[in-house]
Length: 213
View 1 (cartoon, rainbow, N blue to C red):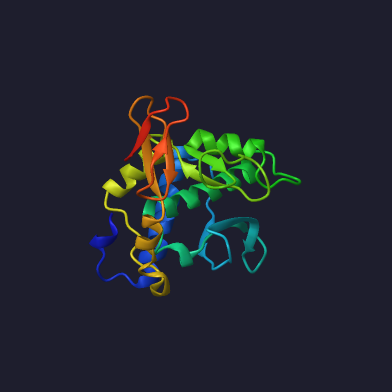
View 2 (cartoon, rainbow, N blue to C red):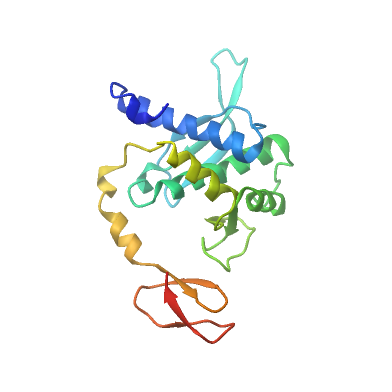
């Protein structure tokens, strides 16, 4: 059932129903349904798109615990839904490692985590762009073109999924971010690069001019 089919739903309902739906969808498509349920929250944490915390919540009688995945709504207006949901999946990989892999003792983003990211179609990078290191204390990611995540999120969005609300203080910044970086492609070998719009780039492999995609 899509969000627009529920006009009477409250803002809270729209937001958290969508996040719960996205978690269940990616759990099925990318993790084989192996991940346990968790509590997805919105938390404003400086310099972070989101985070994972194992066993963060418990019932008042202590009989049950659950993990937390938090997304930072400060960035919802200036990122695409595909980018926002890629952060959800990034944190789901942390949950997978915590529950089904080997929880890291030191490096938060280690090789096991990085390999699982690659498996689900997100490429780890300390810069969030091609060329960055794939492991370390602070590691972001970028979306693999035509990878499993990209295919899955296209299916989800094609079924009417949306995130209805964004922080009004951030509204209007999407255009600024979009204009700051452009994809360039080499027509000879297909290599891609990202840079400011309007500049002249030459492919390092073919020595041919690269065109804005």
